Image (tube, rainbow, N blue to C red; front, side, top):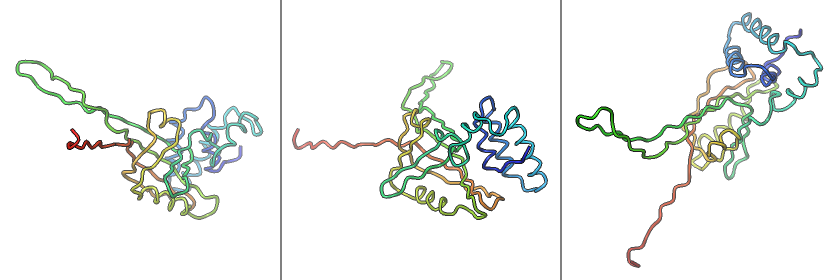
Length: 210
């Protein structure tokens, strides 16, 4: 069986019956491997596992791996939009979301436990991990520059993604950007930290008309 490239390996993650979370973790470990021999060995083992039970030319295999930059289904993409800038598509990243409730607790004398008062729901805390990949032997700097444009803006950012939008989140604010080093000449990895954002209106009442 021929050894596959990183791009094609990522394309097979969507295969039915595969543990996507486990496979993505193994791919992340593969990308972080600096020993050339270990890297080659791990890539070969991962290729064999991913393609087990499939044959080259399999129509199902081709239909699953034909979409997206890495052959992944495009439904998982994240699109960022803001006024005056070209939309930025983050291809098939790993998304995590967390929300906490704002609750006030009050202790009472001679009473076990506390009295809870629900205040509000907190912001959604969103983490997006992904990578930019160039098909040439150089870093995809242009994609990084566009990402930095969104990170540094003070404007509202619109996020389009079925999973995030289903949570009621459509606007976000970037709070942090991490750029872990990649040993590969054509890959830039990134991690975005964001908070959900909702329009907040202040209503002014002129007391002179009361």
